[in-house]
Amino acid sequence: MRFAEVNLFGVYVAWISPTMVGAWLVTIALRRIAGRFRLLSHVWHPALFVFAVYIIVLSSWILIVAHRGSP
Image (tube, rainbow, N blue to C red; front, top):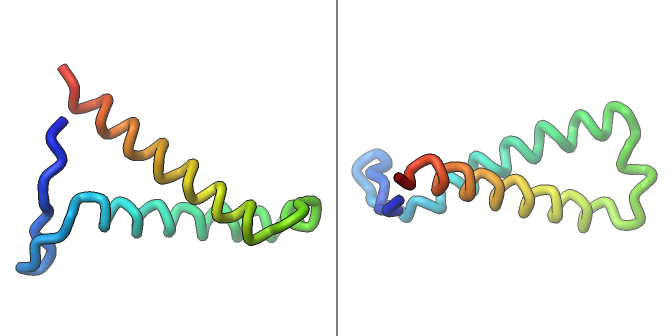
């Protein structure tokens, strides 16, 4: 798949920018779910864990989109 710029309200931004925002929204939802069940209290460093989850969500999303676009 060819990653090109995205026209966002008349401004061309890199494709990764909206993807990063979307991954962050997914991570916020997962963090709230984990907070509701008090799962973050079992983690050594909660901020580092949330950052790792964000990287996992972002990279998974990019790999899925890239794989779907390949022939």
